[in-house]
Amino acid sequence: MSDTTQTSPQTYARAAGITLLVILGCAIFSMMYVPSTLIVPGDAAATAANIRASEPLFRMALASDAILFLAEIVLTVLLYVLLKPVSKTLALVATFARLAMTVMQGINVVVNFTALVLLGGAGYLTVFEPDQLNALVLVLFEAHTCGELVWGAFFGLHCVVLAWLIYKSGYFPRVLGILMAVAAFGYLADSFGNLLSAGYDARFAWLVSVTGFAGEMPFFLWLLIKGVDVPKWHGRVAASSPGTVPVQTRR
Image (cartoon, rainbow, N blue to C red; front, side, top):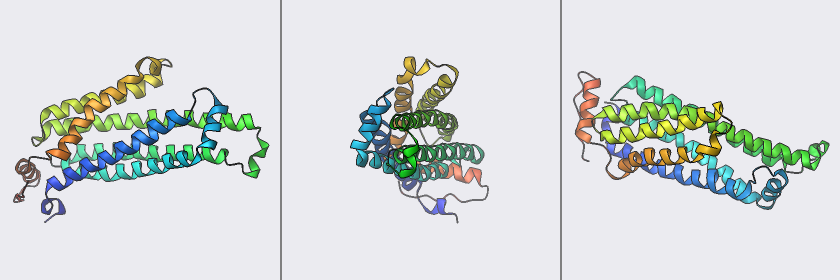
């Protein structure tokens, strides 16, 4: 008997909801609060001065990012377990798309860590003038933003497939799948909009935040509070594995 039939899907659902809360907390701190506090767009000297003055805060953001992408790996596996009864193939597509996003998030941590190295005052960096070092740091933060647009495309694909799986599952409300499709639209529009138009972000920066929050949060709150319809989940498992006897567990 497989581990997924021995363990109640409610356990996986609640674990996924809790993991998402961890990811959300880390993202608010490291992707929103710290950058808005330390990075001054277009001003390399001010940005470098802020980071030097608040290095512990910047390092905390790096650690928060690391926790975030590690938690993403856990969440990816939990979602695969919950949704593979609908379609194992599509659940794998969603899994690999989210894992690809996670790899890009890890690369972005390396980019920000490199910016900290440039400001560390190592002797070999004396070949650069202070203004040059400051400019390189700002370039790295711009590269970090570009990395976000790339992982946004992977995440958009993940959300598209996730939306279909939720909608077709039968053990989640269909409206949650529709809302997840809205999130997918926001991430894909943000990624490809910025790739295709230099002025996209200035006009539509709000779109990804609104659609992402409105599309993702209802599903993960549902996982945390309501979980899954256990009998229907086991029915799906049995249907996808002929000859398997459904195991009824308590909600």
